[in-house]
Image 1 (cartoon, rainbow, N blue to C red):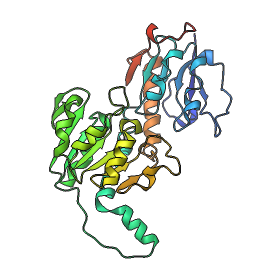
Image 2 (image 1 turned 180 degrees about the horizontal axis):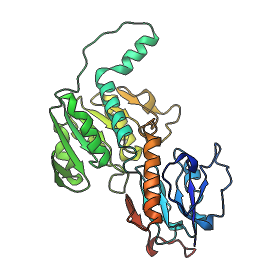
Image 3 (image 1 turned 90 degrees about the vertical axis):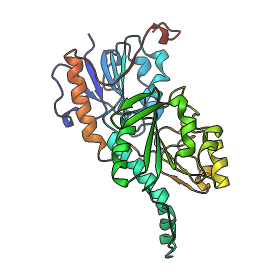
Image 4 (image 1 turned 30 degrees about the vertical axis):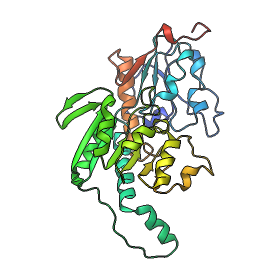
Length: 325
């Protein structure tokens, strides 16, 4: 029976790994050419390397003929679900819920505050040695709409609490009631937009959310509103966003873009009222300790045949490719 576990973090650096499996380090290397650490057919658990290019992350999948668990170190798993045709049936795919909430929520607040308080303009003025004052909006007394109210969305609301916002509205895939108030289904998002001063996107990228923020969505945002995207670039229609930015009707703070990475010369770089960070919501000093704790716990559950955390899906016969796998 397959017993190898491929880890993108050296196993000796992870406390609490259970005995039994053979732990092999593989993160693809600096250039993606690192040889596999063992026979892919003997790999039972594949932990997807973090912050490597797509070809590295998904490269081993077609060779993992006996894999039982694929564990990502990201909250989103759209890169793996796009490859389901080459993954055998019966494989559990788990995400990194619990790892990125702290860091991503911090960045969402950072982008929100920086955009509202005019920090990009201050930086440009400093570079020119100019003292440029001005009156800028505060986050206090604003109405905030969180689109994607899962673990990250809840963590963002945790961090909004001290800022004296007027109101927080919440949207998720399906409606529910929480201790903080109602969560609206995503089908009801459009009527909420005219009331929001800040719209924060932290939803997963799915077929339902791809292109969610289109021309109609943006047109319903109130004049002067701020759009913050810490989700995935394709959640937003870039062309439609550019139209609104160039009109000066709304502003945006984007940790993710479509395309990504944003190429030199793309009009989004120079669009008025936009602040761009290069997809750094997850990678911070908060990542590694939480990732290690997740892996130790998840692999203990796997070895002891206990229920796994964060199961997104289990592959089935309908995901098999033409090669019969």
